[in-house]
Image 1: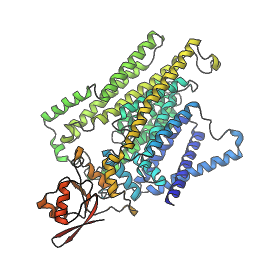
Image 2: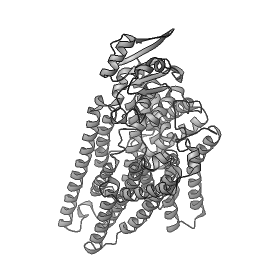
Image 3: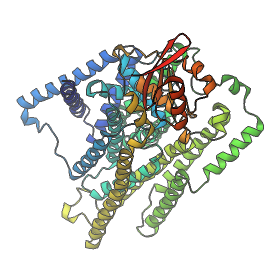
Image 4: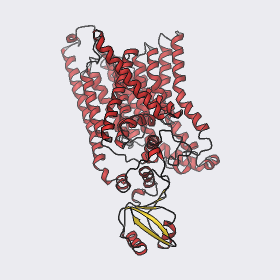
Length: 619
């Protein structure tokens, strides 16, 4: 019955989003490439503000019903006014290809479970609490350790999971919708839709971005990959509507607004897109139009509302609550010593130029490719591409971003994390994705401008200068498609490998023992749990096992040990309500048998106290 209900609600959810997309297409008359990301981002922002108002569930229901009403109105209109044209647009070859590829990857995500550390320390546990309580975390939410992380993507994931079920694959599917809608929007930069080479080239170029996403992959809820591709989607929309900036402002408003609350660093990537908007406004013929200027200023102001609303929430609701980078307040106030700063600087510079790392390799490869392409275009094709200008601009962006990361390590991050450059590869990968993606988008535009004939100037069968030119065009399509498919197959196989090895992961081991517990009303389990297991890969000392236990048990009081000390066993166990054995070893088996008369196995043991005696009972 529950499955049937979720199936029905899932269908209604899809129909609701179709209703919004049809409405946006009819009212705003924007290209289909930008509609999914516009609708998803707008929904996420609405749910976010509903959460701030303490009305997550009601806000979600209103959004769902409103979409269904829009769809119903469109169906009625189509039935009675069919002469106005077909209701659904015909799919092109590119759109069928893109949808087919997306369906394959979403199908994998729908069978994927979470394994990454940060899912359990923050991203997934936040969504679980929101789904359990129908509210944003509060200062009393003991399960949430880092309460200052914005809830942009969490709001959208909540909305999808509210109606489709709260399983981990559903969470990944929800975030996958955002990711692939961003990629779809990037293809909107193409103006000549009949030039399939442009789509093939973009498919190849954008598929390479997955190479720099291996540290954060789409098989988890981390948002580091979303940041740059959201900025790239904004750039594509602004460029496509550079002659109609009012429409561009409408499109990017929810994108930029959501981007500012995806993560605290999202404001940086939103600023990149908004700066590009201002640049386009100031360099085209519309800069003297005060209405356009007002639209640009209004867009920037509106995009910052979610960011400042979150800052306000942190300053009021969470006033006095320690958060990440704030818990070591005393250490931060004292500052780092000169020796520590020098050590951080040396390691940072060494890591920033290490050609064996993916971020540095990506920057070098795309630098060389962009320079070579610009030279070939100028010498062979006799064309002046804008790629070299964009290369310079993106290099400046990368440099400033790296300076910002260095400042983070030197002045904001606690010493123990800063001296090992915690998270450096993830931070760097984000800007490299933006760098590479920006060059790919620019190259696609340059290629489009290079064709001898524009679409529409001559009949389609005469759209090439010579027969040889047409042959090169066809060969280019084949080569780009082959390379794109090869890269995507590698990503596909990587995701399959992750799925196939899930039974060997710690989350699976914990889940096999504890299950995944959800409580009506979101009431936390206040029992105290002690986990026992090995410390392979530092899974206990890094607190990985404890975070996983907190997620699955929905209990904030979870500790873990890797060894029993015989003299302290009774005293230790008396402080807990349950012993959770994830892995056993001969030492634990012998001690537990000797003191409590049990043949220990993986499972949950209730700790009972009878005077001075401790009794363990397998539940």
